[in-house]
Length: 184
Image (cartoon, rainbow, N blue to C red; front, side, top):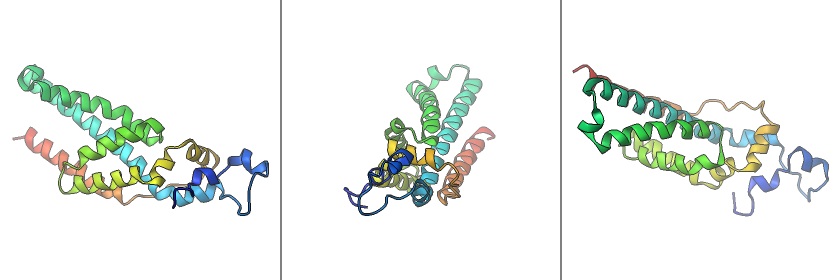
């Protein structure tokens, strides 16, 4: 896809199609565009779901520390406050990522960058999502043009993203670490 060949300029929505504003080639339909990007859309939505999962996990771990140590902010200091803030911030970011809100693209990039610290599976997931969010197609998915495509073709199913398997492995690994630490 070249710079001048962005799909949001090609799709004119249901209102634009009736106006006869098309040139020599017909614009792709909303259904065709949605089918074209459904794998990427599913992966990005799974990133939002993953952000919610990590946010809930961080919040649960912070609550566990609070129960175990009474005043973890005094014992762990800034690290505990970062954990609480990180968990609380990921919840709305993940919800916005699930619905492809335009403002959530940058926070999802930052979350993907943090994922890169979890070598090797976290790095693979983080690099993939950085690529997805930074590509022209990724930018398009957060645009008003793609919101119109989603509105006009809600019946197109997204299917399964193979990235979900990597995310599940990552979550299981983190859960195993937390449970091992809890029951020692």
